[in-house]
Image (cartoon, rainbow, N blue to C red):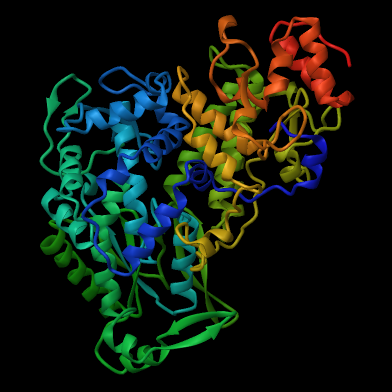
Length: 635
C-alpha cells in the first residue's frame, strides 16, 4: 500500500472481505443487496440477464476469478486468465455478450486428483475453459444473493460467511445442550454426478429464478461435454459440472429442499411457529418457539435437527427409535423427491453415548464428566494418517529439496502445512493427544535433518510461526528459519455462526467488513472513465490502487479532486518489459507523472515549484524516476 507514513499511522486498518471490497470497486453491492431484499419478500425474477451481463458485473466477475489458483490452469482450449486480461475492458465485455448468444460451452477437461481425506483414492475434477468460467462467475454473482435469502440456516458448505467450524459447533450444541444423543449419518452415492437436471431447474423456478434465457444458459452449462483423460468426450445426462464455479451453488439449491423438509418436521413445525412469540435477547428481537417445542414433546412427533455441509449431512435425534425412523424416512424422501440414493454401508444410526460419529474430519461422542454428558472429539483416523504422510513428505523435501525448490521454500511449505492443520483440527477437544501421536512419528523423520536443526536461532527473529510456537520446547530452527512443532497445539472451542452476520445487508456486513474509508464519488467516476488502448488488468488494478491509496496521490499524499488529475503510472515502462500487474502500477497526480518522465530542466523546475515537495516526497519521486530510467532531481 503506497500512502503517506503519517496516513499509515493515523488510519486504522479496515476490516475487509475481499469479494465485498471488489463489489464496492464496481459499485454493485447495492444492487446485490436489492436482490436479496426482494427474494426475502418472496418476489420472483424473470429478467436477470441484463444485470448478469452488464458491464460492471462482467468486470467484477473478471476481478473475482483472476486471483483464483485455477485461473492459470488451461481448459480444453488451452487458454488461461492471461488471454482475458490482455483484452481491453470494452472488448472483454463484448466478447462475453457475444459468447452467450446461442451459448454453447466448450468441453470441460476432466482430471482425476487424489482425495484429500484419502490420497490413495481419486475424485474427478472438472476444468472448464476460462471464458466459460467467467460466464459462470457472472451468473453466480447475481444468483447468490437471491438464493441466500431462501437457504436454510442449517447448511454451512460453500456459502458466504459459513464454514466447517460452524457446522461442528452446531453438532456439539445439539449433542451437549439439546441432549440429542443419537445421530443418523447419511452418505449420498456420487451426489455431484447424479443430480437430476430437470429437478434442479424446477427447484430454481421454485426459488423465484424465472428468467427463461438464464435457465436456458444453466441447462447448457449442465450439458457441457466432458473430455476424459484418455481424450474421449462424453455428454452428461445428469450431475453438476465438478470444478465449475457455479456447481456448489447448484448443489445447495438441490439440497435446500431437504433442509427445509427436515426443519418442517420439528424446528419449523406449524405447531412451534403458531405458539412462538417475539422476545428481546441481547438487544435483538428473536422469534422464540420454545412454548411450541414443549407442546410438541407431549405428542408422537420426532425431534430432529439437520446439520449439512454440502452433500455431507447429519440428523440429530433424542433416541434410537427416532433416529432409525428418521433414517428410513429421509432415505425414502431423497429417492422419491430428489432421485438420489444413499450408500447403505455408510448410512447408519450411531449411539453417541457409546460410539464416535465422524463428520468433516472430526469424530465425536458423548462422555460423562462430573455427572454431565459432554462432547469428546478427536481427529479422525483417516485425517491422522493423511497428516502423518504429508508431514513426513514435507520434511523429506526440507532434507533434500526437489528440483526448483530451495530449502527455505520447503521450510515455509512445511510451516504453512502445520499451521493449517492446527487451525482446522484445534476444534477437536482431544486434538493435543492426536497431534502428540502424529508428532512421535514425524520426529523420527526429522532425524534426516541432522545437525541442521538448532534449539535457538542465531539472531532475534519474529513472524507468525515464532509468535505462535515460541513457548514450545519442541521449537527448532534451521539457518534462522523457524520449524513449527507439529505436536504443539491446544484445543479451541468452535464458534457457531452469528445469525446477525449477512453479506447482503448493510447491518449484517458491518460486523465483518468496513466500507472504504473515503468518499467514493471519485472512485465511481474512475470506474466510468474509458481506458483507451489499455488492458482489463490495467483498468482493474487502477481501481484497486486508488482504493489502497485512500484516493490519494502516492507521492504527495493529496486527495484527488478531479478525474483528470488521476494518472496511473507504470513503474517499469512497458517498452522496457513492464506489465499491467498491480505491483508495477501506482496512482499519482498529473504533475507528479510529468515529473517522473521529464528530462527537460525547465519542465522539471516548473513542476517542482508547483508541488513544493518535502524531503520524503522527493525521495519517493526519485525512486520512481530511477525505475523509469531517469536521473534524480533536487528541489
